[in-house]
Structures are given as C-alpha cells and as structure tokens.
Length: 422
Image 1: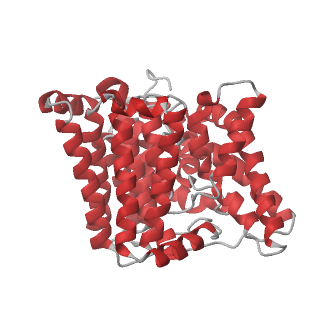
Image 2 (image 1 turned 90 degrees about the horizontal axis):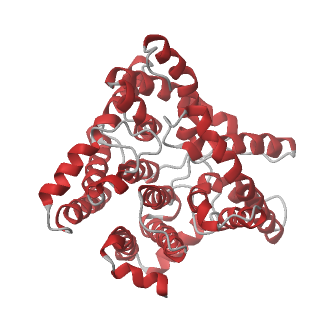
C-alpha cells in the first residue's frame, strides 16, 4: 500500500489521470449495455483469435470492449505503481499504447503469459524486473500468437489453452533481448521500436506454425456505425487532458510555452517530453487525440477498434516524440500514396495505416516536411503487404513496416544530406 500512497503526490498526477480515464471507460461501457451483455461480449473477446484485424467492438460490442480497455489500462498502471516507477514519457506512452490495442488484439488473457515471460527473463538474467517494465507492457504486440494456439480448435480446449500459455512464456522470455537490439536497425527514427522486434518474432513463429500444419486464417472484422458515440468519447478524453494540462499547476502560460517548445524537437528516440516539459504533454496529447479523431471523420471513415488504437497511440506518443508538426507530413504522405495507388482514401485498412504511420514522425522532425511526406508515401505501400510475412500475428505491424521504410530511406537521405549522419 505504501506505493499507492504516492498517488497523493502532485508528481504522480499522470497516473491518477490515467486511472480516472480507464475507470471512466469501464463505467461508460456498462452504461451502454446490460451487465449480462457486457460480460457475454467480454467472454467472446477473451476467446477470439485476436489476429489482425480483429476489432473487439465487432466481436464483443462497445460495452465489453471498454471493459477490456479499462482492465488492461488499470493493470498497467498498477504494475508501474507497484514497481515504484515515477511517471515518465515512456511509461505514460506504454499505458496509452496498451489501452489502444485493447480495442483490437490485446486482452486480459493473452497479455498475462507474455508479461510473465518477460518477468522470467528478468529473473534468469538477474535483472530487476523494473528494468524491463516497458517490454512487459509492449510485448503484447505478440498477443495473437497466444490466442491463435489457445483457441485453435484442433485439440481439447484445456490442452490448447495450456499450450498457448506456455507459448506466451517462451515469447515473453526472448522478447527483451530482441527488442533491445532492434533500435540499431532504425537509429531511433522509428518510434514503434517494439513493433519491429515483434514482427521478427512473429515472422519466425508464422513459419513454424505453418510447418506444423497450423493454418493461420486471415481476419477482417471491423465495426461500423458508431461514429457519434465514439467521437464524443474521444473528444471528451481530449478535453479532459487539455483541462488537466492547462490548469492543474495553475500556470497556463507556462504550460502553453512548454507545448510550443515541444514542437521544436525532432522526436527521435528517446525524446522524453514529460521529463522536459511535465504537464505540457497533456496539451500535446489532447491535440494529437483530437487531430487523429478529426482525420478519421474528415476522411469519412469509421471510428472502430483499430482506428481508435491508432488515435490513442498518437496521443500516447505525445509524451515521447510526437507532435502535430512532425506527424502531419507523414500522414499527408500516406494520403498521397493512396491517391497515387488509386485506392479509396476512407477504406478501414488505409485509415489505420495513415494513423499508425506517425511512428515515422522523427523523419519529418529531423529532415523536414518533404522527407516526412516521402516516408509516409513509402510507408503505406510497405505496410499494406508486409503483414503477410507474419500472417497477422504482430499487432504492431506498422512498427515492423516503418523499419523497412527507414532501411531504404535513411541511406537515400544521406546522399542528399551528407553533413547529417544518422
């Protein structure tokens, strides 16, 4: 209980705010459906294969999805508090990313074995678990690898669930080592570093599954028709963060100055906006959340589980690298790529890629808007097809794609900007 007493301190306000938001999600979920409907839908979510794309709103309904999001978010916050970790850009981002992917792919069943696997690695390597807390949260990029085995339907259910759990332990155990080396691939220009590590592991597992005769059936479950309710929810979250950021310290002028200065940073890993500007990040996060929501609505798209994950991921990285100035060129590049490829701009898959492409924000922040547009243009092309490598087992597929964009683009940039070494 000593750890939780810290919540009364002003410096722990980010945890309090995130707890309030997650509790709000749960309460809102039960306000939309009866408890019976919520728990029935929640059971369907837990037992879903969760492979890309599995929109939990389509699987279990809005109430059950918000319950899942709230439980996942609160679990992450409790872990941070129990580890006595003070708020920082990385752990704030980790909670928001976890909340986002709890809308599609991550649930309270398939995340736990992976987290335990990371814990086992920490014990084996004699490292304190708090050294690997971020990996313990973000290893859920591989959640479908557990659900795919646990609910395979080829053997008895208890055997499959046990096999899925054991797979989670094994994947979580190796994840910290692979993710630690992944940053070398993109030199910090890919904010979704864990996505590349997850993509590598998922690609290997995909080939193993196939060779064992396990058929990985693609999924394309999307929800539709909830824009009014979900837009209201997202704009309310944005407003809550904006008001908290501006007025918690009682010095809006200082907060707005910090918000302005955030836009002067490239965002390259590891740019911790919270350590530099504290509560100004909540204004930045609010703007990014509203911007992402606005983009979906302007493009006449649907606010569904995957798109909300993209929006909350944008907001979360408002504490660790993203701002309106460096994400906008990337999204514009993606949109231009859609037109060049004669695709429909408002198809669910394209909108998801547009939102998640902002993991390449440091390219625009470092080299300018023109190279940002180029990065976004390439990203849509690669992200559209690269998921086939791992059969949808990697939730952070756009992080995997972004690293391939950078492997190609950074050397090209160096030709024209010889004075800058990445």
